[in-house]
Length: 283
Ligand SMILES: C[S@@+](CC[C@H](N)C(=O)[O-])C[C@H]1O[C@@H](n2cnc3c(N)ncnc32)[C@H](O)[C@@H]1O
Image 1 (cartoon, rainbow, N blue to C red):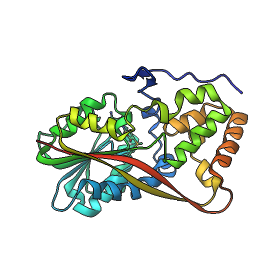
Image 2: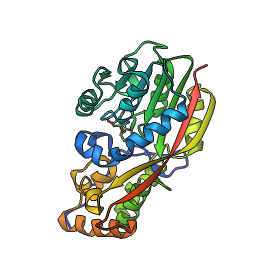
Image 3: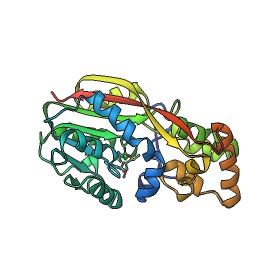
Image 4: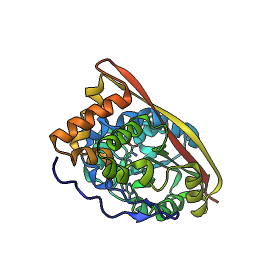
C-alpha cells in the first residue's frame, strides 16, 4: 500500500481527546457523488427534521450548509420556493442546489458569516453541518441572529458513534484494515458535536431558549453493495477521503471488510441511520 495521507488540522476536545476539525468540508464539491453517498438519506432525514422543528406555512426558512439542496427541496415543497433561502460555502454544491430548487435564493456563504439581516427568517435549519463549520459556536449564533424573536433554530448531526449504520460500519471496517489511521479519523471519535448533551450545550451557549433534543431516523435504499460502495473511492466526505487515500489494493481490502461488516451482498437492501436533533427558540 502507498504511504498514508496524514490527517492534519485537528483541535483538541474539552476532554483532551483528539477531536474537532476533520478533513471533509473541502471534499464537498462533487454533487453527484454526495447524492449517491450520504445524500441518499437526505430526503427522509429532511422530513424528520422539518417535523421536529415545527416548520409550517407561511414561515420563511433558511437552510444553512444546504449542500446539494436535499433539505432545501423539502422546505420548498412545504413552504413554497420563494419562502426558502439557502446558504452554502461550496460553489458547486450551491449551484446543484439552485438547479434542484428553482425559485429559491441560494447564496455562497458560510454559517459563520450569513449575508442576511437580523430577524429575516422565522426558522433556520442546518442538516448535518455543525461538525463541518470552522467555528460552530459562531455559526449557531449567526443562525440565531437571522431568526426573529420567537422563531426556531434547529439542526441535526449523525449518531456517528452509534446507529448511523453506514458510517459506523465503514469506520469499523477501516479500523479492521488500518487500525491506527482509521482510529484517528473515525467520525465517531473525532466529530465535535455528536451527542444530545453536546448539541444542547451548543444551543444554550448561543443564547437559545426552550432547548429540546431528540432522535431522528433516516432511511436509504441500495440496489446492492456495489451501489453503496461506488461513491466512496471518489473521496466525498471524510469517509470517502479515507477510502480515496488508500491505493487500489487497500481499497479492495477495505471494500471487502465493509461488505462483511454490513452483512449485505448483491441483492437490494435498506439501511437506517440515526441522527441527533436539537431545536431552540430565539428569545
Ligand atoms: C454533510 S453535508 C450536508 C449537506 C446538506 N445539508 C444535506 O443535508 O445534504 C455538509 C455541508 O456543510 C457545508 N459546510 C462546510 N463548512 C460550512 C460552514 N462553515 N458553514 C456552512 N456550511 C458548511 C459543506 O459544504 C456541505 O455542503
